[in-house]
Length: 89
Image (tube, rainbow, N blue to C red; front, side, top):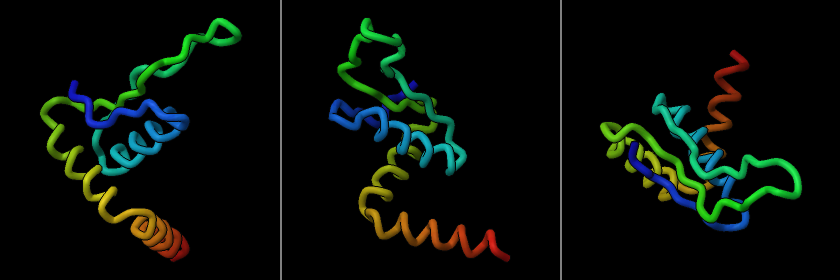
């Protein structure tokens, strides 16, 4: 597996879920590692959350992530609007 995204910030789990969803929506299998899974007061914080893809798909994933970052929120809003329009046909 190849790590294509790392997050250690406040919203690390949310960021990782968004990245995973974006990759999966492009038919690329993605997995999250490092999520805090122990319930209750004994929950140990993960220092870093990672999104991983199969090694042979690393380049594709890195390209998608770079493209998404370069296009920013405007591209996400445009894609969502296009999906909504296609769904109403």
